[in-house]
Image (cartoon, rainbow, N blue to C red; front, side, top):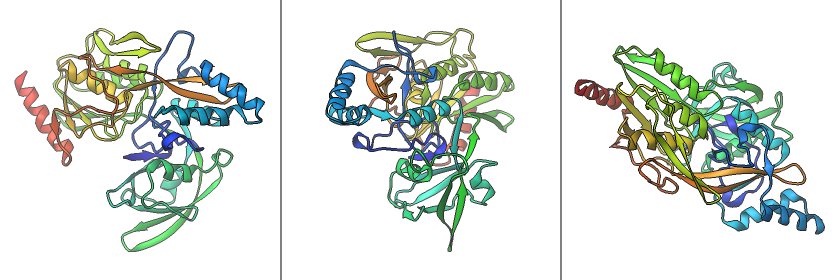
Length: 385
């Protein structure tokens, strides 16, 4: 799995060390979250959380009577519930979550992934970031953070170390990273900074192929996808790169689907036992050749989009099996201002496939030279038109 400190949440102990908010490609922390609207509730993009579910409130109330904080009680209740994606945030942590959904974060600008041997490798360095200013490059090995070895650790834990405790995850605070490049070993002291990211980028790979990469479904990313598609030359095919995209706002993924579909079903989902449906807007480009790239880091809202394009025969999906996170979380405000995010349902693709714990199997299994293979597939699709 790859990760970025983009949406890293300072972590407390959570059930199963659940990933409670990994929203974008390269994101290293938290958990993928599928955010939907529901009656009487607001999703995380709404900048607020609804009153907590009754069982959580009851646990928090009993805890206060016993001298335990509502947040501690909620963490214990979530841990005992078996909710794989349940999480509890302090007010400060949830505020950072909301800022991340706006495409802003405090960090050092590193993306990383864990190799099979347990080593942590830098996969991307954001331009203009503290990591970039220090000369850190893609391919460097991250060996330690503030003196603690990161070898063998899950990427979310590595990012938690990069970010530090909630009080430390502010612009200007230092973090020492140990690095390796070939035989060279060295360390750098980086100072965290307020950074922003463009979740959607596009570049022409050849005259006939444009690659649109979606790093995260943050606010506005769906409209950015639609604008990027509109700017592609008429005869060119598109590679929609969702590798490492760990989700975000489902509404943005549906808007992105509208760039390629002329209305119709994108997904169904249930919230508190009530079935609902998500539909694309009419007028999308349904004729242009399209290949979607996915991998094991493609999660949540990105899987929802992939499943819709695959089920409706709009795209050829290429890569490796996706992560398999198809559940819906809703935030609930606790009496002390902390927020519990609990699983309330699951979504399905247009054909009725469940994604949770299963993922999406690509039409073509490819784990190397992916962009080259995508270009070949696009060429064949173009010839078939």
